[in-house]
Image 1: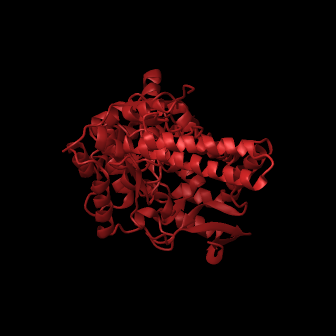
Image 2 (image 1 turned 135 degrees about the vertical axis):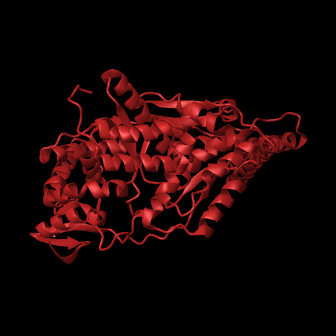
Length: 489
C-alpha cells in the first residue's frame, strides 16, 4: 500500500458498540481492543461473507485469516494500527444460499444439514430460527460425526446462543473456531445508525454508480474478461424496507419517481434520500451499495476477496471514481484444501495426486486382478474363449455377434467381481471414491462446501487453527495436511 495520512476515526459510539459485540461473541480481548482502536485512527482491512449455517463454508475462515495476515503485515510495514474487520452480510435475503452446512460423516461421505429457512424477501438475520429446526440440525451433526471427545467439543461450539439470529450464530461459531486473532465481526445493522448520509448518496448518485458498473462490465466482457455484475441502468444499488425487519424492496427510478420492487411508490428521488438519511435502519445496500456503506463508515484500505468477488469489486472500483471517491485496494484471498493422511494415501495408492483430484481430472483405479481367485480364473477363461470365438467367426455374423455380446457381459461381470472384492478389502474404487469425496465433497471444491466443524470434530480446534496458520499469501492455494484423526470414544 502507498503511505497516506492517518485515516479518519470511526465514531466512538460505534467503536464501543462493536467492542461490546466482540465480547458477546467471545471473540477475545484482542478483538475488543481492535474495535476500540477504530475510534483512535486505525485503518481497516475488510473481508466478509454471508452468514452460512454452522460457520459457513471453509472459505469464510480462509478469508478471515487472509484479512488478519494482511492487517498484521501492513501494521508492521507502516507502524500504524491496522484492524481486520469481517463484514457478516446478514442483510442478504437469499436464504437458500446460506441454509446448508456439509460435514464428512463417519463413513467418509459428505452429509448436508439444512435448517429449512423459508425465503420471503426479508434479510436472513430477520428470519426466525425455529427451535425444532435448530435441534434437528444439531442432532444431524451429532449423528454424522465420530463419537469422540473432539466431536463433543465441536457440538458445544455449534450450539447457538439463546435468541440468536443466523448472523450471530455464524459469527459465534466462526470466531470460536478461529480464536482471538483480533478480527472484529461487524453486521450491517451495527453500522446503520451512522450510514444515513451514505444511503442518501446511494439514492442521489445511484444511477451514475450503476451505469459505471455496467460500462466496466460491458468493456471487460468484450475483451473476454470476467464481469459478474450487470445492474439495471435505472436502479440504485440499494433496497428499502417499509418497516424495520420487513422485506427488502429494490430501488429503481422512472424519471424522478421512485419504484420499489418495480411498483410505484409515494417517493420522489429527493424525498427517498431524505427518508433514508433520517431512517437508515430501513435502508440496505446491495452487493455494490454494501461496499460504499462499508467504506463510508470504516477507513478501508484494502478488501480481501475471493476470485469472483475480486472481479466484481474491480467493477465497483470504477463506480467509486465516477462519484469522486478513491476505491480500496483489492487483494485475492488465500485458499486451501484440507487433506488427512489416510485420504492422501488412498489417492497415491490409486496413482492420483491431490492436485489431480482437485482439478477434477482424477479417474478411479482399475481393480487389480487376483490370480488366486478361482471364480475370477474361470470367468477370465470364459472371456478369453468368447474373444477367440469372435475372432474365428468371420463368416458367421450371428455367431460372431453372440460371441461379442457374451464377451462384453463376461468382461462387465469380471470388473464387478473385482470391484466387490476390492470394496470388501477396503481397497480400490470404494477407497478412491471416499478419498475423492473428502477433497471434492458433492463434486465441488472443498472450501466452498465443507464447514469448519467437520475438521474441528476430527482434529480439534487447535488442529484447525494450526492448519489456518499455514495458509499462504494472497492468491495462493495451499494443501493443508492433517494427521489421522483419533477413533473411539
